[in-house]
Length: 288
Image 1 (tube, helix red, strand yellow):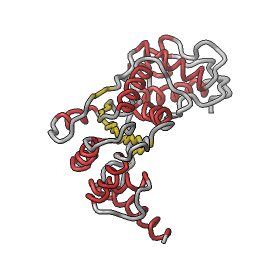
Image 2 (image 1 turned 120 degrees about the vertical axis):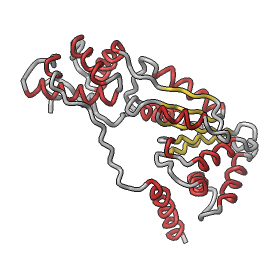
Image 3 (image 1 turned 60 degrees about the vertical axis):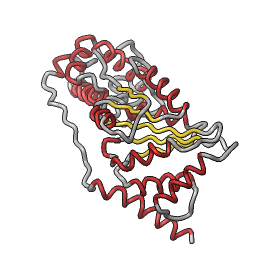
Image 4 (image 1 turned 90 degrees about the vertical axis):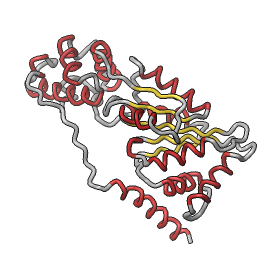
């Protein structure tokens, strides 16, 4: 709506992360490098942060970098039983044509990791790991203890809310080698982030579309959370467009309503695990 008005070539504040544009300021690039190094070594890691802080953006970059030499299995719906989880890994690795019992599925994966000279490298990324049952976490932890052939790797990244760290610390059966938290942006970083999005994503021809007062106000209202920054920046640009102003001003943010997160999820948690299992069964039947 406001792109032409502000001479922007693309929407700079879309909610869904675009892997082509990665903000390397603040702590993002450093944390990405550390996580990549850890996962390439083969270990269990925890990656936490408040909702909207940018965990998915980091994970998308990890998948792009690690995907060149590793098999990546990304679980966005981790609320499945241990047996379903193991079968899902078997399916992704193409190790069997049908559903297996838990022990058999586990054996297939262990044999795959123990193949000499295969250079089999598996990285499992568990998003929303707070929802993963303890038994499923234990199944991944057990796989991490299986013998590996030289050059083979098995790593797991548990990603979730700040509370995830507490649940992992309280488990004797799941031990992570390292834990990392993605912090919120401070006021200075918010201004740098806004300028980056406008110039690198929107290709704004000028120096800065947001003045210091607007950046400071967005930093306060957003609490330093990138998803909130996007919502607020989009709102104030819309307001400036409606008023035909050359740039947004701080008074346009005065009446901005409180930010609310709307979560649409009408499917019961236990049903998610059955959905992929039913899909897998259909694939098996169709292949007969």
